[in-house]
Length: 101
Image (tube, rainbow, N blue to C red; front, side, top):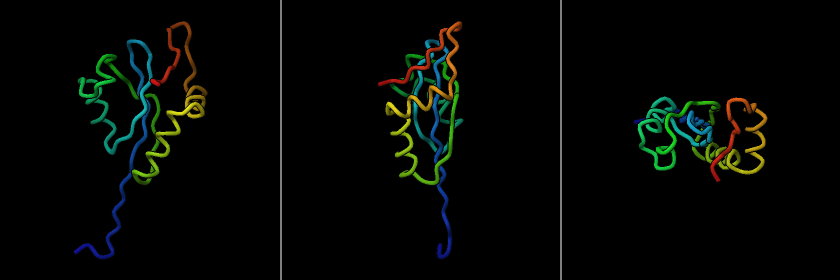
């Protein structure tokens, strides 16, 4: 019986960057460190070609619905502009901060 039990399901929105070609990837998870390990071990089709990856931005959302809305925003043109302001490009190192289409 779980009467009166409040279940909180925090979801993390994250942006990872390839250390090879500086591509960015936006995703969501309940376990950020586990998900990063999955990306770096080649378990994700898109990210497997660009390992290794590092986390460059993350934020928490209270549930999957809110997280999905935020993830979609960060993948939009407006969201990409928001991220580009947060991620200062380093043109000397080749970091152009591109997101996958």
